[in-house]
Image 1 (cartoon, rainbow, N blue to C red):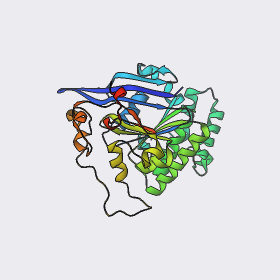
Image 2: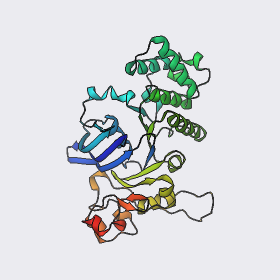
Image 3: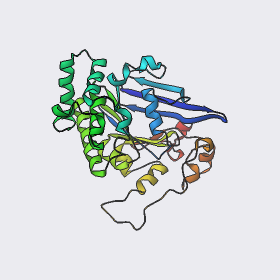
Image 4: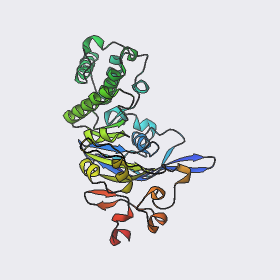
Length: 324
């Protein structure tokens, strides 16, 4: 059984001009111990999917359809009060900016101790010892001496290491990592990704890794979901999606990444831009930018169908049986 199962998730935002549908039928699953990368342009719905899973949608946003199941139990219908015990113990979170996660008024040791004692029966002494162990595990030098330091006394890379420790210290089964390296220098990014990969593998933690960086996905994830305009365009094993992309949008994404093995005079580009939520076209949302478009694409929205070893939401791969 999948640890996380998102089925036809719909997220809407009521506005004065009507209802905006930001996520429209998103389906994905994460197996125990698996890293699922979620990639796409800004505004594709990546972070919104993560926020819906954690139960942290910004009002007036709401889950308007579909289901989110964690270990077979529905969590999308739970209240904020009911979700609170799950956050930390069942689902951890790593956000882009460590300063939005860390409380500047508390030492990092206090924050780790409080998180663990909220979800585990630990004495102050045991919790502090575990906090030091976690700081050592994420690579904080002289952890025993620095445990009483405050967030502002750490560099950006070190703060992100503390956030990883904070997300994992209550030993959740699932971690939502939303752009965990974007605000960091490239060299530090590589260290954080290596660290995240190692620690989650050692603890058997499943990860939903949200990023716009395909390099990070290729290095870290087992499978990847490519999102476009609030929908999943393609999902499958990372190597397959990178080397043999099925959806024309994924093909364009991969074609826009420079290769180290062979030289090209000009990288491929996808003409146009992703549609606004108020102006998503009928049929396939990608059809105005697609060079393989045909009449059906403009009239009917495709669902995910098998396309080799991946699944793509594209009429090019729909069989008569799948078409109904």
